[in-house]
Image 1 (cartoon, rainbow, N blue to C red):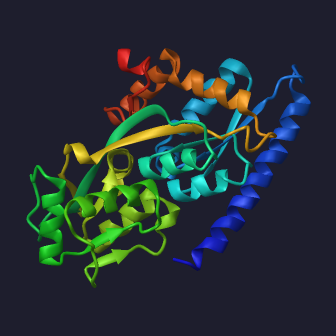
Image 2: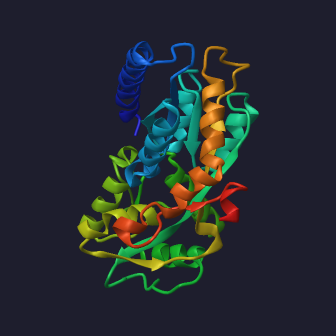
Length: 291
């Protein structure tokens, strides 16, 4: 785990530099040079992999001319890199980490954007016998008792935080040869799910990742779902301009307001229906809840 951090930060620095360079070039070519034409966002990986982040960015740029560019990392890392003051907002999904980010003065508030849910996936032969279990905690207890292979991202991402939350609710601290931390977990949910499929193990995964990856999945199925503890709330947090005076706070606010508007929430509501036959996310702003 520790050996990955320098590489992650090296990649983040390179991406940040490229985003800033792109922003400078973009500003030089805009027709309204007095307006700030770029917003930088640190985003959790799942919504990026699903495609909703790009869909929102592209629609906003087409409407306003303002470019939004992102760097992807697990929620824990996304919040850490936002603490450098190099980003204007974050998009994340781990309530406890989000609240600490705001309490420590790095962000101003948590703003509801959208949600989907997590599911527990496992092999078709289901050695732990969890299929159809209504309780996610009961399912994890069966996995632990049977010492069936479980794959964890283990990287303090939002997915990993939710997994640990469910283990804690079950009163279990998972350990042993059956509980495996995927060494490339920080690269995102898709690689973790594909690795779990290869290993014919169990894992906790967000539904959007399963839907967008199911054509590549050979051995796994959704076995446990629709427990309230598995709801996956995704939030926006503006970075605090009082702490970082040089950030584009006005640009971040405008983008956040648009994403929470009926127009932005309609994009979220419909995203995935054409390609997958079902939505990947559900709107969760006050305007979105009216749709």
